[in-house]
Image (cartoon, rainbow, N blue to C red; front, side, top):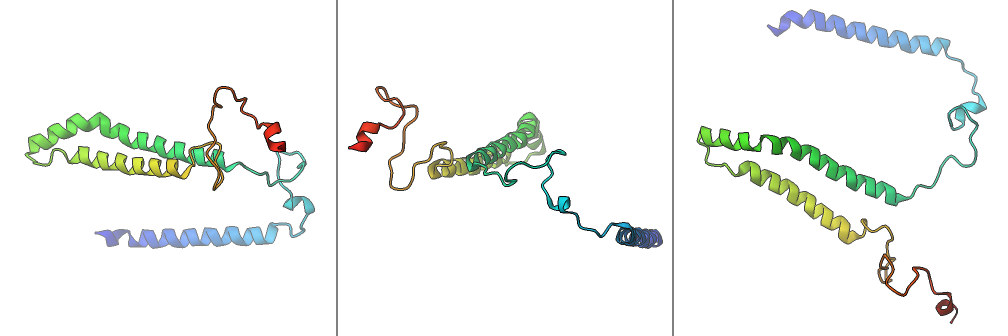
Length: 158
């Protein structure tokens, strides 16, 4: 049954190979070979670049974005489960399956793994916007009463 389409498949593969080789050869023949200095410059919406193209990016934004995306994806995975949970349990009961708690346990384990990950990130200090350096006490924010939140210059001088 599947061998009826073998000739068509082989013809299609040879056709794709032929087109790919033709495109490759045409590019090699027609592309300019002169290397211009502007070709290696950074593209800035048609404007000449100003300053260094490699901008320092604060990793705190990246870390917070990743944590946010992880928990948003969790919500995306949990929403369909939550919408069909009652129907799923009713179907399992009607089928006579004794393992009615399995969907609940499955989601509980999913949330438990995410919770352990959240605790790990929190203990590591990645949830803190201002991280304490090793060996230094953790700074509290907002500042306590009586403090301005800035360093006391008189104590530093003494």
